[in-house]
Length: 117
Image 1: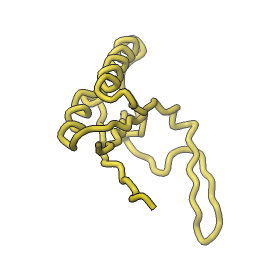
Image 2 (image 1 turned 180 degrees about the vertical axis):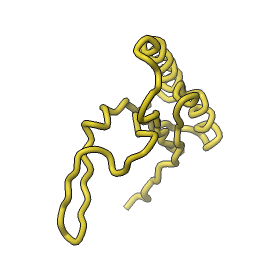
Image 3 (image 1 turned 135 degrees about the vertical axis):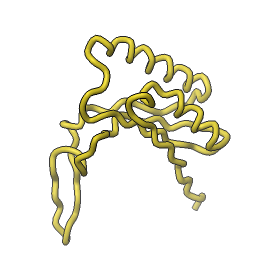
Image 4 (image 1 turned 45 degrees about the horizontal axis):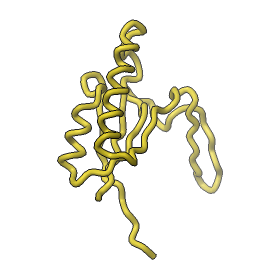
């Protein structure tokens, strides 16, 4: 069955308030449980804050390491799921149910499967 990665993007600033977070966490727990019910081998996790990210580039043979994400953006990668689905339409349906879609976005990407060597 094809695999799809759901990349969860949230606002760099704003988002749910501290008072709204318990309800937001409950929505994510329910969403994850529904994905796990559809795909028992579900892989996914929330990522730590962007201020803990490190970006590595090699320019002209020299390795450069910088704190933070590669680019300044209004949305930051917050987490991901890798799901097995029969097709893209099913993956898009799962993405549309993600709690973040009302204040962020979900990018759906097919996972490339390398042919057996």
